[in-house]
Length: 328
Image (tube, rainbow, N blue to C red; front, side):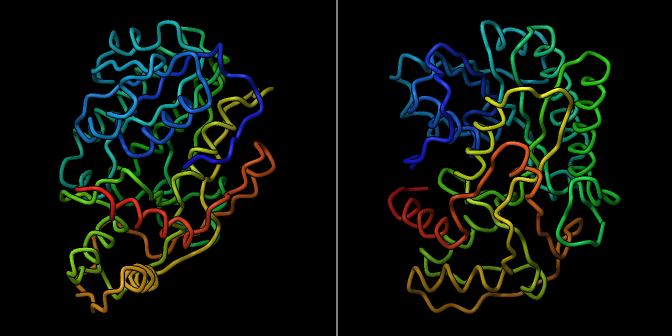
């Protein structure tokens, strides 16, 4: 992966912190930064959802550092930011169902942990911080495509936590002149995404089911649609925004492909690619889920030069190949 370079600036004298760097998206960002010669790439992770396997191949790289710790501890965050120029904050407890089952822990990690990183980064005087925002912030707003300024009521505790992140980031921009950028991810998928556990995402579940010759469950009638986004597009966004010049206020931008795929279409593509003809089993829709999601990515394109290079179909083929070659 990462045959495309998304930056022109020399990063060989720069140090980066990736919180949640042993997680799915975070480890892909780490891989990119190491490949293109960053002076230092430090990962802060407590491995609650991240995996040591995701960073195993980086451990012999002299530019790689691992700090095992929790963003809920402010002093750990301060330690992680020592000598750092840029921060990509990916650490969070994802999943709508997880937040419904345990809203307190989701709030502790996603709100208190985010605030700790924000305070520590402000005090450390870092050059730029980007953070993982979420399309869940759009809540029950019915309009499609989703435009950054038009949000509705949150439908889950997880959505509340991600919206609070944006509110805090906006206040820090106005009160302290500390300007961060939030990337509202839309259903990111790709290599290193865990297909196991009660809160696994739909694409790795579908791929693992197809490879195992098992029919998956689909929540609802299968016509729920999402703007599925290959992980390398998310990496591109992080790199371009981290290295952007002349950012003078807090901004939030959609990071997606800009097209919709239904769950039925998704399963059809995956099962056909794997060569398995299996009829999915349908069940009740999940609480807190929105029916349709589609991003307007105009702002990201115009503000930061974001241009998704990988379609859903291209990304699915690459992801299926990755799962075929590993043991999960």
